[in-house]
Image 1 (cartoon, rainbow, N blue to C red):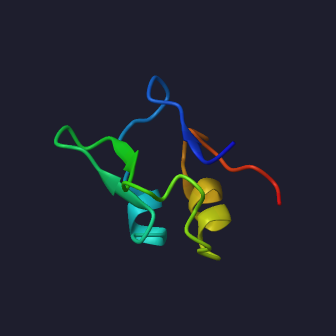
Image 2: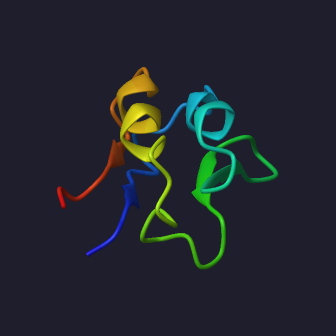
Length: 64
């Protein structure tokens, strides 16, 4: 299981994309989405921090 974004909870704050831009981006409406092929976090050490930075807790990251 990889990173999950709760689309119903996301408010488009963009903290994930600012914190880990190699994994997260924002769609045309400004909501968070994973970059293609980055569902596993691409080994980024910032993925956990991006999840913590989300003001509404919309990002779930599996523990390794």
